[in-house]
Amino acid sequence: MEPAIVRDPEIMHGIPVFRGTRVPVQTLFDYLEGGETLADFLEGFPTVPKQLALQAIDERGSVADVSSFRSRFSPDCPRNSETNRLKLGVD
Image (cartoon, rainbow, N blue to C red):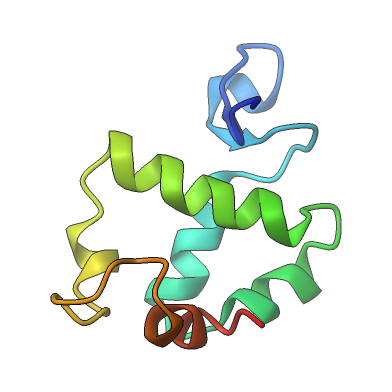
């Protein structure tokens, strides 16, 4: 599987973006940390497919300190649990 998050000095000066777009990945996390849902983000950035956004959440969690993002979720539930999918606004 191709990574959802890419860095290329020719795209947005190397800022991590969603693969195939110029949308910075940080924008998604800013939405979520600000209380918006994944659906809100996807409505505002229609060039980012839902599965790509979900993949980026998984990748970001494995490579960066996202404690402030994770703190919004129940500590005893995996990030892909039904409870957390509902908190993200995912069907």
